[in-house]
Image (cartoon, rainbow, N blue to C red; front, top):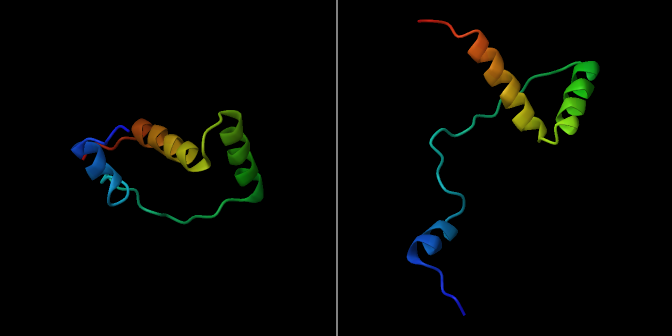
Length: 68
C-alpha cells in the first residue's frame, strides 16, 4: 500500500484549493435564439457553456481595452 505524501494529504483535506482569482456569479438574460446559438457553439467546440462565455467575454474585453 502506497501512502500519500504530506503535501498530497493536505490538498485532499478541506475541499478545493484556493484560487488566485475566484469567479463571481452573474445573471443575465438572452433571447431564445441567442441561447440556442451559444449552446450550439459550446457543443461544437466541446467546451462547457460557462467556459465558452468566459472566453467570448475575455476576447471582447481584450479588443476593447480602455486605457485608464
